[in-house]
Length: 132
Image (cartoon, rainbow, N blue to C red; front, side, top):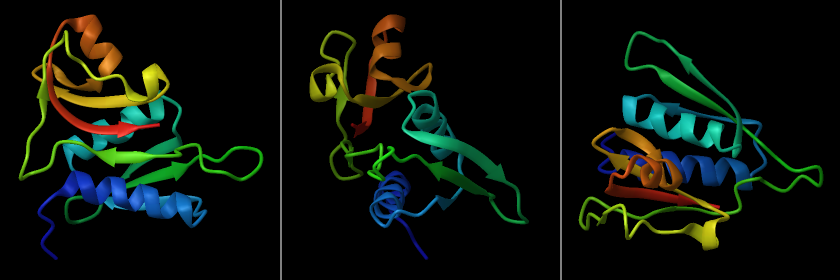
């Protein structure tokens, strides 16, 4: 299986699993995907992130989080910068998702971080995804 955009695949798997009310979702591992999964965990969008080692590249198991009524905590997740059209931003023009209620995931020279952390560190970078 040849995936041209692994980040879009990660976001789509999370979106589909939460829509189908699955307790967790398994994703082929990479360092960038681990960083994105850890940001989702830190921001409170998912319950847990576990990296399972196998004889290949490994698997990231993300435990999804739901509200008391059973609705997914992640109401929207969208890929911003695509392989055909990269979207970059500087610290001053950092996007706000849902007027600050959501989170933008940014790949900077200091690692993958949220839009708030990028503003605090005064760095810009590639806008990977929006989560709200």
